[in-house]
Length: 154
Length: 418
Image (cartoon, rainbow over all chains, first blue to last red; front, side):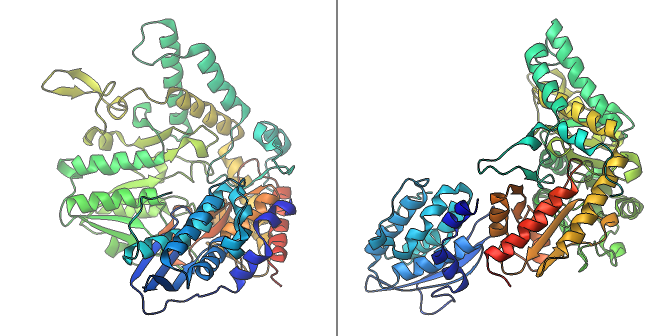
């Protein structure tokens, strides 16, 4: 029983939950979005600052479970400093992992700490927790005018 | 333990799902009955028997099966009538669920003429502890009609703040709609007292009894309600069937909700006349086997006795409140006196999010609900985003409460809370 739990709650996730990276709302930013998970009430307010095609900053204020908070922290780590196109492909990679029902083997070179979420994909009720801030980031980055709007994937 | 149902072991055997072993090998500890209750064998068998032997559409089939089906459906109405002490079977209307019952009321009030008509300057009063299904339909009604929505606030203990009742319920008030038992805080509200004030000013009283009918002996006349709603699946019945009870005078004065078959008297191409209650509000083929299942369910509860079930809930709730109080960092939202509340207990555990609590408990077979329980404003009132909720029923044992408390202790250690 605690084996299943440990697959979900990797140490990396609990570390990010207790000590989130890049937390807080900062300026400057080109877009700010507010996303909620209507089933549980988790919320994130997220700002994106893009300059010269680079994701210069992602700042946020969020409330929610360990999975959603840790995922936000990991996401900010992964996209800050990356060209928008590369950050979008990391987003796609994480989305594929989360929607893979536990069958996708994550690429640590791309997802770094994000590979800890591989276990979350086996818990359908928690996938939305992990994706909340990723979807918010994509929305904000699209609104910032730095990428072509894409159709919604989930 | 005093107050427990005397033959709890026998009652538990009536509910086959309670024997369930989960995928991780854990035995089920089901503490989510305020969400939906489990079903006794007699409800399952009644529904299967109907589908296997008596299935036909009702009131429109001129054959033996049609007659049997109609008889079973209408017998279910009689059982519900008796169970809630309704003065007439015609006042018991089958709907899809409590949400549909409330929307039926709010929508037909929007179309009503005469005394029940709602317009600019009129007020509808609700409370801050309502389920979303008793908030949103009234927002929609008042917005559409230019009326004003007002509400009772809550005290820090999770009770209705009645200090301004005479201001809130005034001569402009047309409707007072409130829950009898809160699905989040567990609070039992003084419905009859509030109804008295509402009737003084000529307002009608709508009662959401979704959590009350499963747990309390209910007499609709004594409740003070003019209209009362509940859902079948929380009273050991199936999903897909709900009830609206209303005083004949009110139901007669309301226009029909859905138009279609069964709700008519006669139809011409230019105009129709409508059937009387209850059929006026039951357009189309109803959820037949679900209604029959609900009939079996209330028969089952009636056989055990609602007084005895209420005593059981009080005993289990008191034991749970006692157990939860032993956990460091745990705060119960709502009244702490088990005699003044229902069996749903929402709580916070400092340092762990409700989702994570529910996940750890699930790994031990303990099923609870985590989130806002469709009561976001009530959570906001207490400054919390979400909570964890345990809810018991007639089949809940003290050992299951122990499993919850142990599970919460384990949760604290898993998340390294000292």
